[in-house]
Structure formats: C-alpha cells, structure tokens
Length: 371
Image (cartoon, rainbow, N blue to C red; front, side):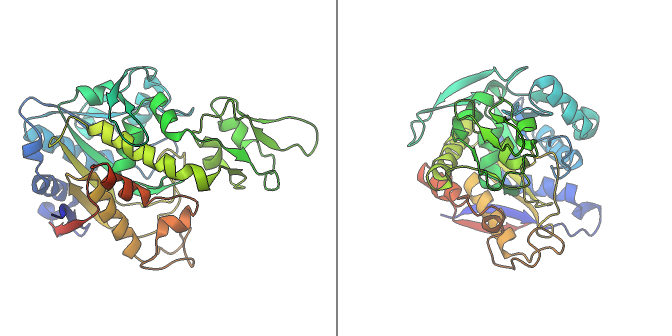
C-alpha cells in the first residue's frame, strides 16, 4: 500500500486558507490526533538556523504546529541538539541565544525551547538498532523521553547528504555531537592545486585539524588524526579545494544517516508526524551561516507519518519545478532535472530512499493527497 503524503500549496484566499490554517489541516489529515495522547510531552523537532542563515522555517509557521499539538492534548516543546562544529549552536547557552534571536521564544513560537542533549551535548542514551551499518545509535535524551513527536523539516540542499529533509533532520538533529561524529566518520583533505590559502578552513575547523604552515606559497592541510569529518571546512571553502573520497565514503555516510533516523523514532511507532516545508529551497543546509537564493519557487507544505515518503514527495516537487531565475542553477538545469545532484554532484542523496526502505523506516512509494 502506498504511503499517504498530504500536500497544500501556498496559494491563499482568506484567513481559512492561509498558510497557518493549512498547517492545521495538514496535521489533522496526517493523523496528529491519533499520534498524541492527552498529557503527552510532545517534542517538536526543528532546526533553529545558524547565525547568519535566514532560510530556516519561520517561528510563525512553527507556532501553528505548537497550537495543533496543544489542541490535541499534548504539551509541546521545540527542540534540537548541539552541533559538532563550532558556531552559534555548539552548546546550549549559545544555542538558546541563537534560537531566541531567530524568534524561537514562547511569545512567538508558542512553546518552550529545550536543547535535547543538555548543556554540552552529553545528555544522550544508546539505542539498539541492529542495522547493516550500525548496531546501536546515540540519541539525545529529551527526544527519547518525549512521548510523541512532530518533526518540522525545511527541505533544501545539503553538501554531504545531497538534500536535507525529514530523514536528515531526524538523523543529525536528534543525535548529540558524538552521534553526529559517528555518522560522518569521513576524512577530508586539501586539493593543493585549488587551495588559495585563504585560511577559511583553518578559521572554521573545530579541532585544529586544518592548518597552514610554512613560508610564502604554503597551502592548507588537514591532519587526518584530528579530522572528525564534520564538513565545516568543505562547506566554507569557496575555492572548492576541500575533498574526500566520495566514491567510497559517501554511500556509507548516507546509510549511517538513515540508520540514525531509524533510531531516533524507534519505540515511537504511531506517535510521530512529519511536516515538511518546501519553501526557500536553498543549495545548502540551514547549518550554513548564510542562505543563497532558492533554486526553485516555493512549492508548499507536506505532512505524513512516513519520513521516507515525505522526503520523496518533496524531492519530486523540487525535481519537477522550473529553476528560479538568478539562482545557482539558473541556465544550468530545467524542470524535471535532479536539482540536488547538480548542486552537489558527488553526493548520493537517493540512497536515503533506498536504505530507508531497506531498513523498514518507510516507503518511497506514496500517494500525494491535496488538502
């Protein structure tokens, strides 16, 4: 049987058909009332956006989710985990300040904000999964302790996963830094012929693995013993001088990501609803401290209880859409082409669907139901 994915576009014709009202209708259609029991502590998993980023899901839209959870009898709280890399979300204090600066305070988003893995990312527990790549995964305590979940995802490109949606949101977003490191488990290197010695990798490497030593003309290098595979150097390098062995490493990375997503919701069968916003579809993750121009026009909002199906539906919407003028793909792609494969050609994003089905996390075979 095909998984149902409910869809609403951004066309509005009055207060009962605006975006906020449509979120309520989508969650109702997806079965939020069945997923939440009275008194549930309901985690709303969301990405608060890195400082300098502006493409993350608006707290105004997020409030509609908190209101729906409360109407269903749950006690909502917004949550995310601390980052592996240094930045505006590396510990709970900075993370909360970043979230507040982006409008994620109860007065705006309608619910408290909790950093799921604690002050320094040490509040987590092991979850047995017994999957091909990983036998267990590390998941933040607040997500494990929550009775139910709503996963709000912003669909966009990603420099290692190809694209980021519900699966990536669960995998990286529900894992503490040590779990993020386990998923990455890759080693980056510098292509000396491309390196311009700008020191961007040095300035953004959280472990000091990236260095420039020597006299005039010296290039950057990365110490594999210190590299934790976070990808900060690659994301920030505008000269595209940072690489990894994509042929052998990116497939296993993507499979580990899917297996972490599996562990994040294990034990909550029937208690998780997914909402994906296909708006501001930018080339890079919300972890980047910038937002490039969207590569397609805003498509709409999706809801489902199947994370694989909702990601596939979002992917198909973006693939079918014409390229936006002035974007990174302007003149390089058209309707029907895989935008994410063109943005990040070394990645293997489709593995998310293949491995997601393989481990029983969901189905890429879906029925799109317009709401």
